[in-house]
Length: 439
Image (cartoon, rainbow, N blue to C red; front, side, top):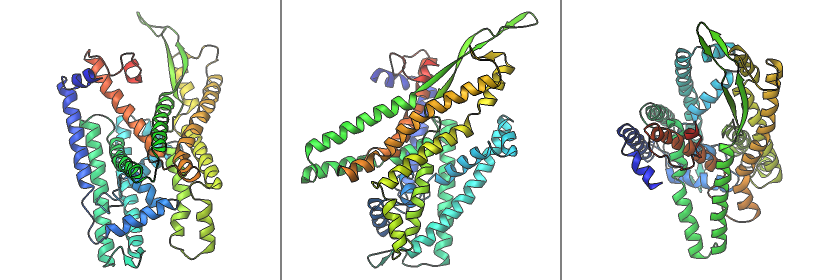
């Protein structure tokens, strides 16, 4: 491993990409500590910590992906979530609206237009989010203290412009990483935000052990569970079902084309972390609304049932994750289109007739492999709540964050591995376990 890391810096092009990526991530983290004017961040931080311990809300979900930027009321308070939301919506529209479906099939030019519409949509979503957050902050009061000492139109306008600009700047930073650095820029920015919370989690656990609030055996148990969860998340994330495909030989002029065997790699977790994001957003929205109706018994009941650790919350959460895993997989992968493309180029699955039989077979395989993947990630998503509420063991390192971190880390390592192997260097894994090297 150390030798492979040393080889990275022997390749000028790869070294340049890594330095650019690291430099941009440093800029992002520095910007995370520049505050929006007119907000008492200590009151906002106290409110979000109370809300998180009481069941969480939509602002807490945003703060997770923003790396604590919302908690600090920084210029990057909205983070990259507006861009992610717009990208997911446009991607889903590609499977519903003919206009976006045509753009997807136009190649580079179509993708360029989709990116343009995504940027426009990001501005609109960021504007709505900024207005909503600024109005919420104006009404926020903790212990008789106001989060915004001087509310009014000027505060709303200033906050909106600042937060929209911060989101667009983050989006630009992510695009620069993707174009000039290594890995997916947007994913790496989310990765940097989430992993920045881990040192504080370890420090908090260490202090609890030091003060006697947590026993040493429990601390070791937490670390063992963290390592085990990471291992199995890697295992499932890398899990692929290979469907063999045989291409018939074709004679065109004096040349013979085809005749080779290949396979279709269907991932166990095609949807990634998106089902968890959707499920959390839906379940946390009622608890966020309930913060505006503090004296309502109906809202108190809703919050109690939709609090982490409650059986209703757990069942709904896991059910929604599984549902959205199937929904997103159906939007992204079209078995009929895959079967038609294979038939067009003379490909077929051994033992299956081209056309409908092939598409039905691919669909059956997708349905079977999606369920265990979705169920596993739903278990990982509720694990921190289970350990914290049902066993009184604080667990800071599971849930959505670990799934994102593993996915982004594997993708980035695969790209670095490809650069190393392409230039005849030994990769990270001697046995070639990374899919990027196997390819």
